[in-house]
Length: 171
Image (tube, rainbow, N blue to C red; front, side):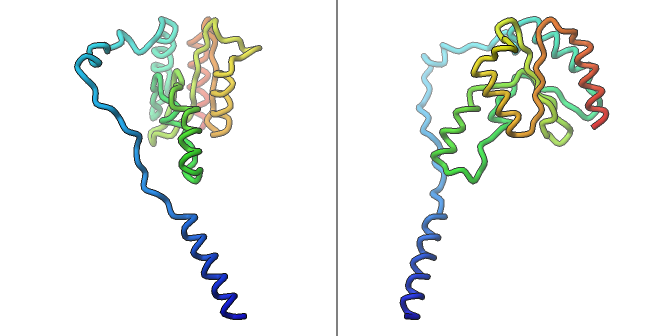
């Protein structure tokens, strides 16, 4: 009877060990790039798609309190990640929800911690009937406890930037 209990315990321990062992990470293969392919690329004339994006960036930049940093067009994958305890196959699938998206502006503190994400919403964004992309982005920020503020083009950028600066000074 004791032998059976020891054998069962050994089998359970072995199964637990095998179940927790991780395979080493193998990144996806990347094919070589040719000169012909490289000829299809060029530098974008500006990071900003339009004057409103550039204008709001400059107003925000001038308003930020010392110790905060403003970044533009930050990939969500750089600020929101899939939890490390999610199995690798599921992690790659979930990564697809953030890898090709960005936030218009990100304010970080001096440690690099995300303090506030800002989306500048133009005419194509309907706050009463948001697109699925807007709903996903809003949900991702809520789930990760990173504040997301949506600003409409046409709002008073100076007033919004001053409000943000006041809030940052209080925190």
